[in-house]
Image (cartoon, rainbow, N blue to C red; front, side):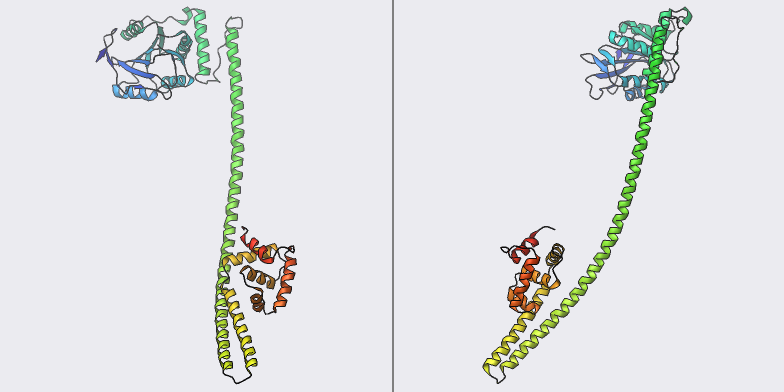
Amino acid sequence: MKTCPVSQLPVTSKPNWKTAPAGADYVKHLDLIGDNILHAYIKSDHPQTLSSLSNDMVQTVFEESGLSAKSPLYLLYNMHNIDNVAYKYKQGINDVIYHWGLNFSVIVFYNVSPSCQIIIETFAALTPNTTTVLLRDDYKDAMSTIMEYRSGKAPEPAEDQDADDEAVMRKEFLSTVARISWLNMLNQKVYLPPADSPFYPYFKAIDHMQEDLRARDSEHEQEMEHLKSDGEQKLTQKIIQLNAQVELGKKDIERFEKEKAALKSRIAAQDMELTRISTAIGEKASTLHSICDQIKNLDIDAQVKQGILDQCHQMIETELTEKRLKMELTVGDSEFLSKLQKRHPNLNQRELRVSLMVKLNYDTREIARSIGISTRGMESIRYRMHRKLGLDKHKSIKTYLAELASESV
């Protein structure tokens, strides 16, 4: 175990009594000298800004070393290669002093750079009266001072009334600055010396600065309240809108379910109708074939017989075409008819049927037989449809319907 060269006390250090702050390129160490002297320092090869106090590491040292927060404690702080202290680190110091309740009797800083001296003096002005804060040149002087106080041989501090006025005012000034800057105590009354005092303008300037900071905080709080209120109103409005959309969605779902049920019922009815029609057409075709067989056996004029047979075959073909048309109607065909009807509401039911058969590549003769008209009559219907569809003379109905069917919905 190492031994302190000044006090000859044992020095305890452990691997977990050091830490490297996130984003920093230095390592903070905390050693225990004897049973109640803490020694803090950093290891770095160039000047650093202390970014944050490692309260967790301090807690670990206390737990593993058996130190008591209520017993007198002493702290040595080596400021070598430290040229600044960040605000977050100062907040950590406040936490240790005023929240943890540690009983630091004496804190001695040594190797303090000129850039950090005012920070240390400000810290000293902020600490409770039960803690003595001192600055020394090096480790030997710092440790010797600690040992003097530890043994009770340290000189008694001079009373304030016997102290130099300038030193007293300097300490009060730094204490006031620390309360405002480090502790954010904006409502703490600022001590003002007499108006004829040479220090009065400086303290009055702090007083004005404190008022300005209070006003700024008040404006900030009002702005935050406004933002909070505005945000809550917007959130409430969004919730209302979302709830309304949910209710509308529920109604849409109910409506779609009803439409779905109605469509299923309609499809079931149409399936039954198609089955009936298909059966009836099959029966008609079978009867016509039977009649044709009977006609073939009749002893009549051959020409008359052939004419009757041709008419029967034509009727059979018409029935089969009708059956094929009804059975081949797909979902795509239904969508096509719906699209055509929306695009051209002036088309009647027969023209819609003709359009579907044209799309399905039935020829004019088959379409005419299906709807029970002559081929010439079918030509007249196609002529009228050509005009209703608004087509020029160079574009056929079949081409137009094919293009319509290929369009995305």
